[in-house]
Amino acid sequence: MESFGEQAPMGRAADPDEIAPSYVFFAAGRLSSYYTGEVLTPIGGETLPG
Image (tube, rainbow, N blue to C red; front, side):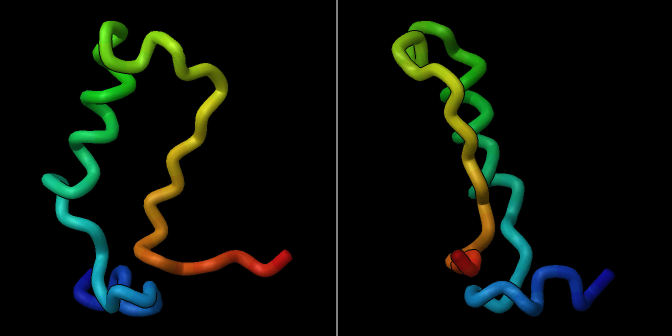
């Protein structure tokens, strides 16, 4: 488990306090009511081919 996230460009897995605000944003309808079909991909700076 210690090596989890080492392959990410940031060199570590995300901390819960780095990801939690995104969940709060989408869970709070007042904040995110205009967003539809959005996907957040917390990949720590990693880019995907293509």
